[in-house]
Amino acid sequence: MDKKLLDILACPLCKSPLIYHKEQQELICKADNLAFPIRDDIPVMLEDEARQLSFEESQALHK
Image (cartoon, rainbow, N blue to C red; front, side, top):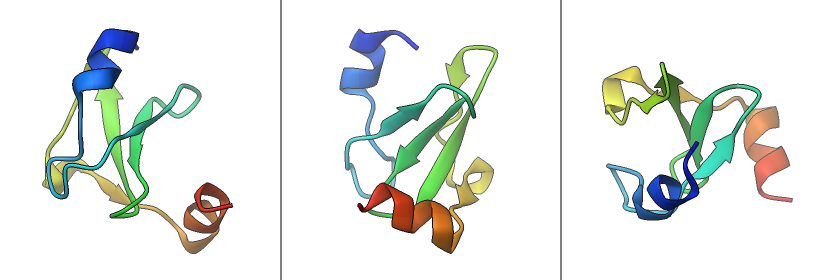
């Protein structure tokens, strides 16, 4: 993921910054507990495509 692109991307719902998870190819919004997929190096920033983080994933992010 290009660092410059990551710097300008924000959650489409709350406008919070996103965290890049390379292994899972996702952009994480801690505020909304959502993970947006990255497909073919393109972030899919649609609410309908995001997955809800599990309780365990959410707790790990907030440590």
